[in-house]
Length: 150
Image (cartoon, rainbow, N blue to C red; front, side, top):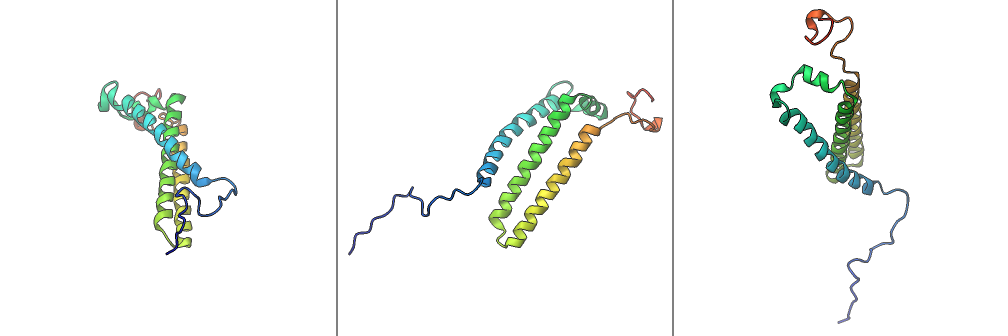
């Protein structure tokens, strides 16, 4: 019987590659950082919308219009929207990479997830920054009571 030497478990099986940026590492770090930021943003959102003031009874069109009249709340909601969609899309990309074995299907599904996230981010951002509760030229019976034309 010959004595074999077992390599230290921490010894790499192959020499480390040093080619380009490690995107998986940055995606992993993004998930941790964005998850932490989302916890703060979401709990702040819930605190303002549900706990302070009159609670859920205060949420109506006028409440949203009042919030979106200030750039602070616009940016708060846009940051929450962007982080949540990119976080979710990155999570779906990871699930697809783990479970879809066919290369073409994996690339197609990943592209579809990225496209869906991009479209929803663009649409959500447009809604937040172009929101106008009192559009010019609208019928007076359709305008909220707080609009000057109604």
